[in-house]
Length: 523
Image (cartoon, rainbow, N blue to C red):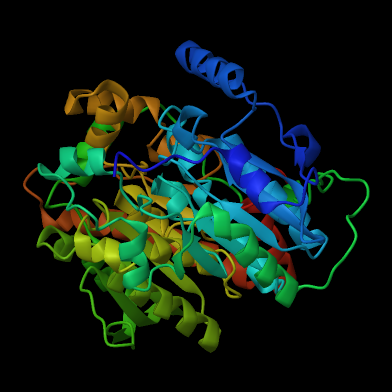
């Protein structure tokens, strides 16, 4: 795998586009605000990357022609901090797709990335949902998205725009998968099996549509674009969509600020790892009645890591999809079948017109050959895209652990409610420590740096309500303490559902689109 050529972004642009037709957009062209990180070392890393590449970010976006047809191009640049996705990276992708939707243009995308940028932590990681939402809106507009995965493509990029193409191909011998091999080896104690994440293997297992060398890519793209869209002139002027703040103060869900206080992030993480802590089973038992359980995907696959219920949440008819921490502790982790089961719940909620409640509590998705060959990254991407575009009210409950793509797959909803000790991080914090410091021993430092806690996410506008866990559950796991948190979450969900169901669908949809728009249309 180490001998595979990394193809520069400029080579992709030259190979695919008509000569001298590519016109690149800067962040300013797309209305993307400046970003000035507080960390001096990170500012220096960004400055060096910009000097070396001559680019502002790890993705190049712009407009071009392919055999005379206008297209939007989104091309990753691995030379810029290993193609890692920070918040402005995500915003560039979103802005380019917005332009394509506005002007009815196909999008040609070629990602290459090591994943979410660890220096920016949870705020950047959670923008995965916004990128997936943009891809879903492109799909709903009936427009083409062609993806060509380059070596390597992993992490959040693979789990969003790398897996949401109308048609997806890969560079020969490219590494493409959810988790990079180095982090896998640290977390699992053994190397990832050779060849599993290779593009040819993904094609053999139906994860992607085929393997195409760069020399043939233009022919394939031109054929797809020519068949699906008519020839058209470039819009004028060649800049992005003007930024409009479509969200007013009266549109926003009120936020619970009572618990917006500093906390010890690592203590929160340890609290959620306590086996005696309340889980989805206890929460459902305390809040739901008249329950019917749906089992499996409806397509011959089943996973006990996800449970789906139809019933009443304190009297309100709902569909609930929940991550079962007990099943995960017993070895049934969130895998492709689990996420397909979640997507079935999304469909059922939409078909029945019932509000959807998700419960997030996971140490992370399954890391295995089967998970990669089963298209784990694609299932995460599809969960994000479908959940952020579902036509019914949605509420998520961040109950405990929120690790990686397995957590974010159920998180982006109209209202996000978090238990006080809950947290979200791009990777197991020990894994993030390995990436940044080459040792797992600084996991607690990473918890502080990455703004993983419910209080952090409340301050960042990611979480809407934080439910107190005081008095804390007794050290001996006294069951009399369990209903305290369950009652608080039950009431918070009920209140959120009442507010959401009182809105006109168009108003609810507008607010959701504003929320999952990469920060371009208001916070």
